[in-house]
Amino acid sequence: MTPLLQIDGLHVAFGARDRWREVVRGVDLRIAPGEVVGLVGESGSGKSLTALSIMRLLPPGARVSSGRITFAGTDLATLSNRAINARRGGDIGMIFQDPLTALNPAIAVGRQIVDSLRTHQELGRKAAWARAVELLNLVGIHRPAERAHAYAHELSGGMRQRVMTALAVCNDPKLLIADEPTTALDVTVQAQVIAMLDRIRRELGIAVLFISHNLDLVAGIVDRVSVMYAGRVVESGAVEDVFDTPWHPYTRQLLRCIPRLDGKTGPMPTIPGLPPRLGTELPGCAFASRCQVAQERCSLEMPPMRRKDGHLSVCWETPT
Amino acid sequence: MSETLLELKSIRKEYRLRQPLVRRLRGEPKPSVVAVDGVSLAVPKGAVFGLVGESGSGKSTLAQIMVRLIKPTSGQLSFRGEDVLRMNSASLRAFRHGVQMVFQDTGSSLNPRKRVGQTVAEALAARGATAAELPRLLDRVGLDVTLAGRFPHELSGGQRQRVGIARALAMAPELLVADEPVSALDVSLQGQIINLLQELNAELGLTIVLISHDLAVVARVCSALAVMRQGQVVEEGIPQQVLRSPRHAYTQSLLAAVPRGLDGRRGADRVANAPTKE
Image 1: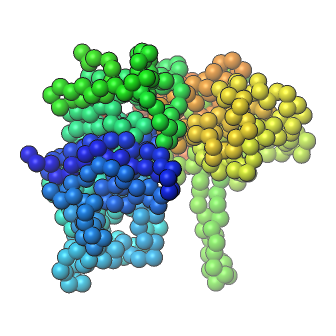
Image 2: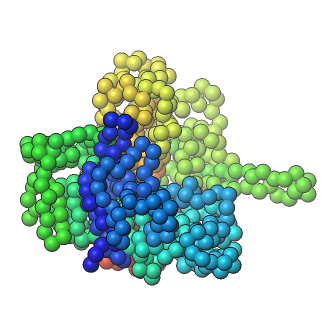
Image 3: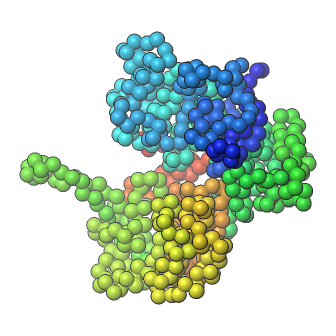
């Protein structure tokens, strides 16, 4: 199948004039129509910048230094501002971590959905309002006709994230980008929002790029997962493969670190050390200094990419 | 180990809301929000005591009452058998030295315009200790001494949290109240901070109250835990027991909501049936 979204060799750099520091260093990513792909990594790994590059929403001071992002056959970099604006909230919906800053505090939530609907579709006011209420119902908001008149601050965190979802899917997007959508929520609410997202994307047949630092959470809803470390994808594959037989030492160590309800006590497993500072140029593998199985050449030479049946890992170690 | 260090009896904290004058004149009852609603807890000396709950459950309010940053509306609070709420200023000062707090957000709990070494040195000076102790203290929390000259924004989140712990330790406290110390940190770094707290407990005999919304973390390191909901303690016990057979429905829903990786995928229906809060 031709991918809906295809990212090839994406590099993103921060800087000014002649001093640019790369923070995303050659990310490849493919999402098929209707597929759910997870992008996992620690803060500073470049996962959010990768997502923002798709929508051309990089913060000031950051730029795509090389690479290609194709969406449904179109190179997004070549689009005019007007054309990319039509994509944002149209073909591509986005949900952010903090719905309180993403929603307009001075406009009722129903009205915000109406505005988005009428920007992208030919719809009368009444029809748009009716559709907004329908969407609020779809994302699991009780008494949607009433709640449509509410302002963001009058809703709980979970409800706000449901409103964000309604807003993101209101124009039947083909792709939904969800950047840490549940990180600010309590665990029970997180579970509900995840279940809601999963139901919506099945019902509407939307492809999802799900970004999170929580591997266990991602595993619950994605088909494939890519693990990022210091600006690179170090492992990717079907979610079962990556979890059951992680190849890259970073993925293995990260999986061990996640606190689980397994009845174990005593010291928690950790990854010693710290990730390299943003933009540091390293000749070899960026994880080498924290890796338990690192050899001498790891920090001297970039490891090769090894792949088998759609599972790939960037490491000198040969996967077994 | 059965000696109680900190004891709370029927602690209640109400916040009065503003009432329009007309309603007050009509003699309507004053509106209020109950943040903590009759909590009794005993923290044993030398324990790592876990306090679990979601946002709005009152756990942070309770933490601030424990260190007497806020006064409860009613109830009793005693530290080493002494009534904290009726202390004179001299013994209150001693209490404040003996009880220290570590906060979640190191971005706002450290002075951004002070070098972190100075921040810790000031705490040392407040106890009457000399700055000569600084290197040993930084080393104890796993910070390189060369970082003392840095500003908070030049450090990573994990390093900043170590500074926060060093500042608390500078007072040589008996009790450390840690309010969500790792929830802002990446998974790979959470363990480092939690392990540090465990070491301090084991090596210095420091009693720790660990407040977290993450049941898995609390269950792993605590010797006792309490689950809070809507200002009340709904379940209390030894972690392994609570995990194996939670008695309260709320604890069960908390347990069910913890992401379980692939296992969660294989039994996703359980999550969909979790009771709603909204």
